[in-house]
Length: 253
Image (tube, rainbow, N blue to C red; front, side):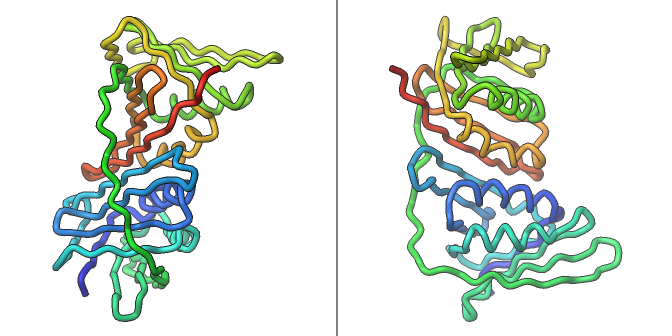
């Protein structure tokens, strides 16, 4: 057994896996003594996701050597959805049987339910983290971000963000409808740092909507972007981990 871990909240783990299934058909995991990691691109290369769950975030964590394995996003998600708020989830890699053992353990009763997810063949691509200087950094409550994206979706398929040192404006404009949301520090932004006079960029609402599954696992979200540059959408995962999306900008005519 090269990898075994017990995550304290099966429901939080469920929300994390739901974000992964939205990005790619396969989830490439890497486990080492420091924790459990995922980094993958969407097929169209418009979105990259980077998941970090440090070893200290688990109630129990054993990893004798660095190991990598791939599972079907759909099968992982179907299984993770069976976890309840009363459960812990144990992950055990069974290399000899080419499967991931997932056991839900009721915290009060100790009752166990075990599922097996088959591993898939493949090579995990090493993806470097983008090294970009993003001049606008905005932090807000996750639910406020969720409402922002849901509001904009009613109007159109893309959203423009305009950041200055005083405010963040989000707007979606179509011939039929328009949507504007002006946010300032404490109304409702937690923090606002803009290192240029104005930063403007546009993103597809469908890509940002993918990130919303992470809202249930994190109280806050941090957005970082630059003019016509990718947006970094970062959620904190319980236990000191992170779930980071890189979303490509929309080209403007």
